[in-house]
Length: 500
Image (cartoon, rainbow, N blue to C red):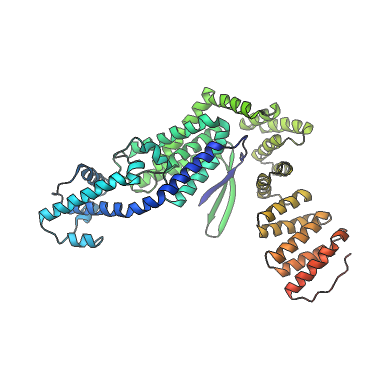
């Protein structure tokens, strides 16, 4: 399975309130409808099954217009052999009703049963959330074109869609603003649903979910950020592999798979692949129109005016050179700018993207470490930790000791004690002659003893601190107390030691 984790442009100029709002709206609607849909579906499925069995085995019976349309729709989509199997009395009964109805021969009783099913069918059609608010191509309701985009049929369906909405949505909102972006989302989402209906105009299967609109965001993302690299996680059983791939490779590959799946599964699949394809194409076209008409430039001018900030011309130029693929020129421009403003965070963010695109990993790691330090300076621990993860994924193994110690404390503050101990240990090994190594060993010993209940490991860390050649008189009492506690917990007789 492939899961997108993040991409290179995970920072915006202001809070993505529209994206947050869309996510919140989807979640609230799900919480308000999920259990009711689950309660309605068993009866809905039962009535439909009974209608099909009775209509197949007794085609002479009179039915309502709704049932006739339903039965004809199913009959047209399945092989004749399958329809004959439904009508057969030799197959295994579906339930008790099926077994009993086979014994009925009286035409009036059979017609009465069909009439009763017809009434139940009509009541369900009237009250069912899916029938009224999901999009059914065979009998669409205008309001369902919009409402279906906010219905989800399960937790995984919701969580998957919302994660993709966050990854692709917030960066487009930052670029297009809070007017163009939601209009794009709704219009392209409607286009996705209509595209699906064009392929399956007689389908009676309700279509629900934000997938079509989110596919549109992916199409817009491809047009707007074709060279941006997306970090992916592939896993199967116990195997894990992380890699990065440019949008212009990854997203068309996804589109090709959706086209293939749509062609192979037809109307029998449980996923509306053609809605995804239609959404992607509508999104790509919409993004192209937004760029060509100049709406994006106008939106950016409004955003910068509202937040009272505009990027330095050198950063703007570096970004434009990045998007144009002129990597060396962009690096040169930003290096000159950083020489005069060494704490320019926005410049370093663009610079590390340039290095990554150029596959200059040492320079990318150095720029990422600087971005991490600047985020720590701004007290933005979440972004600093993301920078650290990117640094490690790029092969980094030795952050500056002071920076690394702060990051270890972030992990500890998150109560990720295993990771914190690992980082404290690696820090001490990488910087054995700096005072931060003593602090790291003491912290690793404390966590191993009190939080992870690994006294043997704790003893090893305290012994390493005690044996360190870094002067540590200020921490001698802590070291000896730690040695005593760890030895007691490990069942070793405590003997006070003299440090060097």
